[in-house]
Length: 449
Image (cartoon, rainbow, N blue to C red; front, side):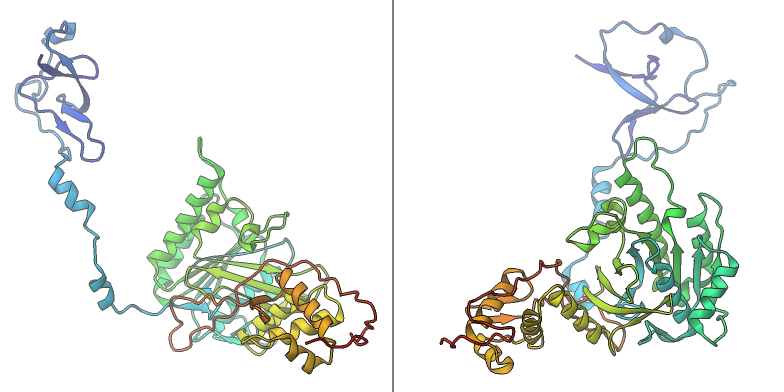
């Protein structure tokens, strides 16, 4: 049984009009003389629609009988479509022959090019940290007091929670006697819905100079979800739009201070406020942690290109963040020691610190000889520290620091950031052994082989 095409309104498609198929959807369509319409196929035996006998203007003709031009419809061509799908196909030989520019950093070892989130609790000092990085890049100075950022470059700081007076005061406190740099641009108000357009307009002027852009904070401009859109979908959509700005300006960095969740999490990335859509769209996630009224903190970093690690910081003068150590390596070692020894008694902390200082690993006899503790006490402490994941039992009798090297796949020009240890979960406190006859120094029992 033969079939014939009809328009969606039931009107038959004239036999001299071709039915064509959309390349993207494959839907049959035909030109009705005015526009492209969807087409259905019906059996020839079906009763024609009354409109078939309509003597009105025929499709494809104008009122004076002249042929009417029609817009071109992209027709699906299996061969062409297959070639289009493989347009970007490359092989390993091509990839191996390429020479790419090294990854650029706004703050070497911590803040690479691309989209980065800086998460932390409210009023913890995120804005102070983000502002100090922006000023360091604009002046060509040092971030966190120790990390040289290179030549001065343009920066844009969207201080959406501040005004001119507060921003001036903070800049002067961070710069001390130095003037606020001319390369430091800022905006305190952005029209609703125009933040991405605003960032794009500025990047069109400075995008080729490896600028640093800071959007403080995302919560001030985050739009509601579209109708039928999940919160995850909204977060990923906005994150992807912001990421696209960086893609269009190679070497640029976009930093977004953002709140964290009130609930804690063993994985610090999970503390970022909102759904995983936002963190998933970012290249780098940085979490700043500090107890209230404390002068110390920790900066946890992970990402697609940056080495995963955590760094000990100090917080002084109500707003000045600095590395707690001479460089990133020293600050990472300090952060690891603080994490491993936190909540331990004196003897446990002493044993843990001894293990941390020896990446090659130690055995109980070495600890006994170095610290003068009883063999039984040392064996018990080492076992408990390993059980609590403060240290690692690498093999029978051998204990090592909890170090898993997670290195960056790219480098920072001639001065690559060092890779240190992987962030681990906060471990539970260790109970000191209560063996009979052992005093506070762990003495009193005979050593056993």
